[in-house]
Amino acid sequence: MKITSTNIAKPTTILWNNKEVVTGIYKTPTNHPIFLGTSDVVGDEVTDRKYHGGEFKACYLFSEDHYDYWKKLYPNLDWNWGMFGENLTVSGLNENEILIGNIYKLGGALIQITQPREPCFKLGIKFSHQNILKQFIDYGFPGTYIRVLKEGFVKTGDTFKLLEKAKNSISTHQFFNLLYSKEKNKAHIKCILTIDALPKRKRDKLKQFLK
Image 1: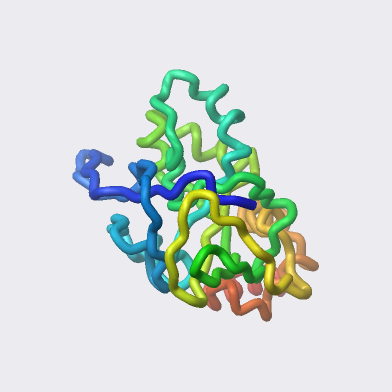
Image 2: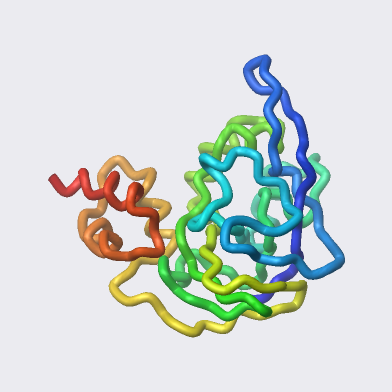
């Protein structure tokens, strides 16, 4: 895996249900390194900290490999890296292969895979149609958030070096399906209950399906 583009956003005001909402989803590529902090990317807009930023969502990664699929569905949009609100556009990021809890060296930072992105209305506004939320879920390749274990700068061209492969874990793709499937895979739930790369509240919520 390698960084194709580093992306940050300035605050943008959008209209939702007749109310003004400030968002950082309108990210654009930078031409300089960005600093991954433990709660966010320095210089990036994180407005709604209930759902974005923080220890388990310090930075969002999305795969360059999925861009062609979405461009065909939405050919009339003004396409550029950062289109999905990701801080890092990454080539070779395969949600079927990366495990929740994997630890990587990336540039000057040490990062850990945490949880997939769950789409909200802001993505629908960005793509000018709320249908993309269901399309995004059905497609099943949502990118991933990371936890920053050691802060540092990263830049375009930096590669991911796997330092520690998570044990008794599941892939990001499997976890994303687990979140949205009506029939929960109980074996997958049991796998993630002790993985501290996931927030405890999310593990506890899934644990209820074992009863």
